Image (tube, rainbow, N blue to C red; front, side, top):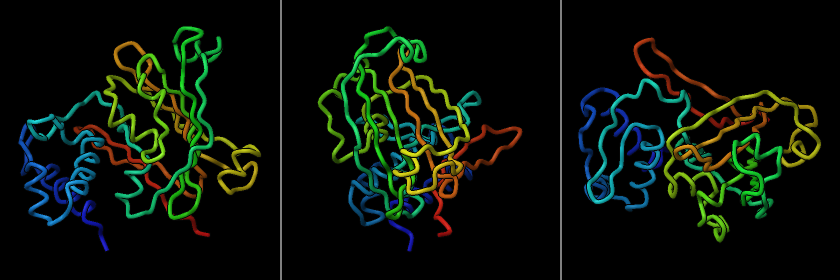
Length: 247
């Protein structure tokens, strides 16, 4: 059975993709969608957040949501969080924080990020599960100069990726995808074998010239895939798709 927020997402997506709602078109207000689908405002907000995460709509506080114009120079992967993607695909998502430390950047990491040595960061390790099975190991750095509210956030109710998307605007992102072999610690957490193939997404986002966050997300190769549809005259969009293990 398709969940209500998934149905709302698909209905609105169809109106946008078909061109019935052209760029700049104001989509129905949240309270109108609540009435139409007979659901909670939180359910509607989840669907709209997913559309905004895909770059399909622009949300403006106190004004409404509008169909976004195509952006030819967008990155081929939208900024998305694991929890929303899993839920929209009909899966159950859960997570737990493995580590949360406030540290200062060492010289090697500072050079890697292009940030000053000694800058304060929040370092997080988080394990995500989909349908009760480990699906992703998240290793994240948040620059506290850019996101000072992260200093006191414990992420007990909202995972770090979703929290950042909701709280902090970004102006540029870079993605790198690598195939890696699971080391002993990673294999233990992801419940796979040491040396098994994994997919690692490395993402860095900026606001202006300053880093907001840097994250490495490691997925077991048999439980995850990257897939995308591309057309010569349209921008490509690559989705992160959790998939059920054959086991």
